Image 1: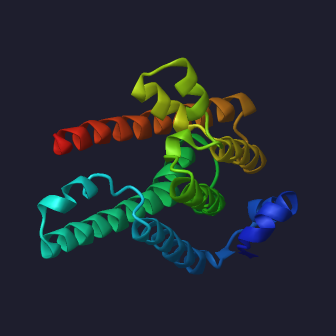
Image 2: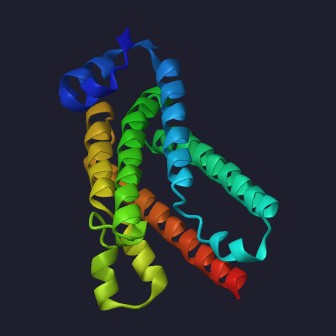
Length: 223
């Protein structure tokens, strides 16, 4: 029996991974899943309340009456909550499924891995808040990402978005996932490295594409 303790999986990783690897039953998973769901929703609601990402409705403010504009904001909030749910489900259930297909580790144990990954990703998003509010920096030019460096070498928006998705937080997630899978799985280390890196490259490319086409749509709406 192993009771999941996310803090100890960070602070005392080797000992708790050894215990988790030997465990036949895992406790406290559903409680933590609910806690992380609430934390994810609150993070995105907070960002929405501060107006982050509301560029698509702000230019229309003068063309709408008060009621119409409030409806626009309400739909924007609903959309952000929906995105938060998709982000939560993808991180905690889709990514573990992909790792489970190629590694001899129980699916439930990989979900435990992704719980800490979700915490790291939420922390990254929280760092965006002061950068956007006080410095006016979008997420892809965060000082923790490589988007700033890319912007000095190219004006291609997709490339900047792609590099912007690669951050110190993302690199730590890759390191954490690889170390975790190396401990829990008998898969050869080289295949773990290849699998995790390819998966993240696909995620970065997809996130950059969504941001790029969202910008195009935003420009069309303004015009």
